[in-house]
Amino acid sequence: MSTERFPAKTITTHSETFPSALLEDCTLCPRRCHANRLAGQTGYCGQGAEIKAARAALHFWEEPCISGTQGSGTVFFSGCSLRCIFCQNHNISMGKAGQNISLQRLADIFLELQEKGAHNINLVTPTHFIPQAAAALENAKDRGLVIPIVYNSSGYEETDSLKRMDGLIDIYLPDLKYHSPELSAKYSHAPDYFEKASSAIAEMYKQVGPPVFTGSLMKRGMIVRHLILPGQTRDSKKILRYLHDTYGDDIYVSIMNQYTPLSPVASIPELNRRVSEEEYERVLLFARRIGIQNGYEQEGGTAEESFIPEFDGEGLSS
Image (cartoon, rainbow, N blue to C red):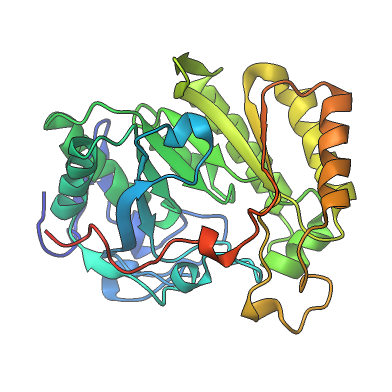
């Protein structure tokens, strides 16, 4: 495994050798921008071939079955293939924060987080680094990484790319942000969001199946997150209906009220406010009415900018 730049030819992983074409003509995400990332070009995600991350530390703000009492060993990757205009982590999604790390260093980070007592390894926005993450996971597993691996993403994924993670991921933690293509086009420039995300979630479920717990901690399964947007409870209800009709109680659903209007949406009136208590309660009542049993809801006061961690490079340096 290279300890410097991403290998120019191939990466060997748990199941096959990844051809350099994956990064020479990048179609890892639904943007399919065809950037030659090995030649220094950056894709829609804003990233080239080298792994870039902004933080690697124990994180306590995930769902209780992920964070537990000791924290989730979370690696926040820089860049994003969705780049919502209201992004809560815009400093890293736009690539403003982060530093380059090698494949070997990423594998070492996984093991260090395990040594610190993390309940799991939590890969946040890894889509555009799937080949590198797969190689680092294999390396770390060969050296004693045994805790569950969480794949935490926007849900905007290519199923063929996700198939390359089959056997490496234990828990999928995707968003399902929009049902309406008009909303996804307006706020994420992705009119195909629901089509791609629903297909991706189906592939994720195929890989990990129904939830498996040890005590209060999830060891395998899927939690689909939905962040309620101000004024969009109707779309939220469509998403919850779809998830319950499709998966029933074989997945968990996390209904989130932590939307925080940051400076990029100051000029967009409908987004420049928090979700009201009445809006959130309306969605929760709907979820109960249609029979959602396995779910998480958030207590009041979570919509605070302090909820967002500092992306200061913690845990990245050897």
